[in-house]
Length: 248
View: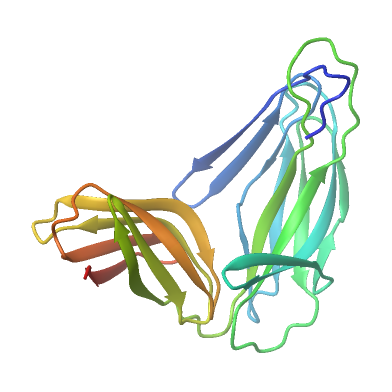
């Protein structure tokens, strides 16, 4: 975030619209900036599909061109923490874009050297708004938008599997560790704990990514801690999971 001469310049908002077969990420930057949209929030590559595409659009609400610069980072995890390093494993074309108002640019991402893999590889493609600032005419917040789109290279036989362990229960806070024993990432969007009679007793929301071989502790907010045998429904970016949980 860049705040210039203690003036607060234009504001921004990020909205994500979920559709049955399409996720639209809309980034809107008000008066001093252009706006741009991308039509996916993640990309998938594989041996059978080494290239994917991303549509980047400038709806032209302020009739300004938008200039974007891309940067690819290898994305790994160590002890549950995200680690990013520059990478050239993928080909990004074009690496820079200048999109006029009401136009769309097709961005192609290709696996540079496709080879069989046993475990998923992950990357983030960052798109930095490098559009020039315009003179300020009102107060607001000056922001340079930088999006990081996840890219996953899938193995031939993906396995999505988490093992769960109860760590602690303190007051209304339950902590559990999810260990990824599969060969692809799992993003836990939401998880709900229910009693045998199906009434809800706890939940987690946060969108945590857990990579193969990694673990992450998740915190649940409980409304009832008297019941020890629970069912957990987990919403992920792959498929729903059902787990039996026993609280000591």
